[in-house]
Image 1: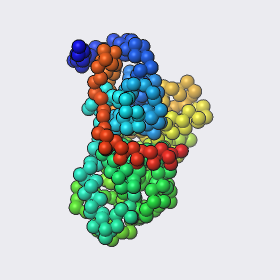
Image 2: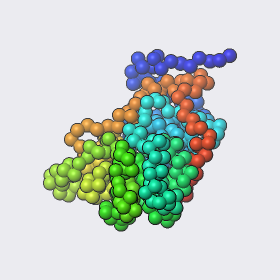
Image 3: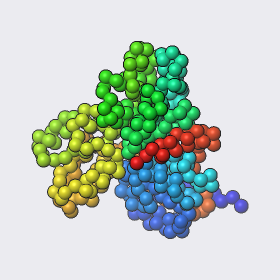
Image 4: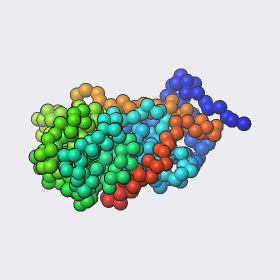
Amino acid sequence: MAVESVAIQNFMQLDDPQCEERIRRAKAKLGERVVVLGHHYQREEVFRHADFVGDSLKLSRLAAGSRADYIVFCGVHFMAEVADILSGPQQVAILPDLAAGCSMADMADQARVERAWRELDEMLGGEVEQGVTPVTYINSAADLKAFCGRHGGIVCTSTNARNVLDWAFGQREKVLFFPDQHLGRNTAYAMGIPLEDMVVWDFDQPHGGLTPEQVRRARMILWKGFCSVHQMFRPEHVDAFRAKYPEGKVISHPESAFEVCQKSDYVGSTEYIIKTIAESAPGTRWLVGTELNLVNRLHQQFKDEGKSVHFMSPTVCMCSTMFRISPQHLAWTLENLVQGQVVNRISVPAAEAEQALRALNRMLEVSP
Ligand code: 13P
Ligand code: SF4
């Protein structure tokens, strides 16, 4: 007999403490059949229910190593897709709210990337496959990871971008990096590639708005994408902090603008930011350029050690799509699993998953 799924509407009326109780009960019933993975940007009421937390690379590895029947991903869509691709065929990846996307990931799609590849081929005299390695940031849809898999390319995260670019330049002379121009520029510059060797591919313009000569001279071709959260951090925020607290330290996520990263003492992934602050001396004062939920958690976590953690922007900037994962959605997802019903399954078509896996495996091989 088919079991009816429990409707989300019943959960939207619950308050957070009610959800808390129901999430705990459902998790206890499901036991080891479920694993809840949580990205560092999740709100507190969701984050506390995660069995494991991490940045994109760590969570990918956790999904690959998990034996649970159900992987409930408290993060955004591309993360659940990666969990589906890296886990076994009998395992099920679930995203508690399907509207939890990533606006940066949406800035590159297959049609535009295929067009860019064709146009680059024209501009490079039919040599794109020999001359350009496509590199996609993990913040992208599975079909773009599959594109990289097909064309000798690779995936990167903010943790391994440098290792990945080393690999990519070892294959071919140039890199097409999408969708985040900032991660691409910040990483390549730190490797010693000057800004003059980088061009920005404007996907709204024919031939990216570039001449064949500009493309021929470039080593890094940066897709014109960005993160709407990290673009809020400005160099003047760093200047104001330094003027007030000359002894303070500045740490930023590499999705932040070049000028911000240049003015920062440290640049790295969410996991790196947490580790660096955790290992700093008691009394250190930090200005942090990443998402607000994580910065608030760091502030709480380290205030008893006398460390002060400041948010970089004067305006509130949360990742609104990460915030879509609510305790209500998590309770709904888990209670359905208790009833034997899977809701919001993320399933990448087999042929696409196979090609994307090639690019993900290349990444895992070169990762630190
Ligand atoms: P991390 O992999 O550093 O956690 O970054 C993910 C992300 O989306 C940052 O905006
Ligand atoms: Fe995407 Fe930016 Fe949100 Fe990260 S913070 S998930 S890059 S929109």
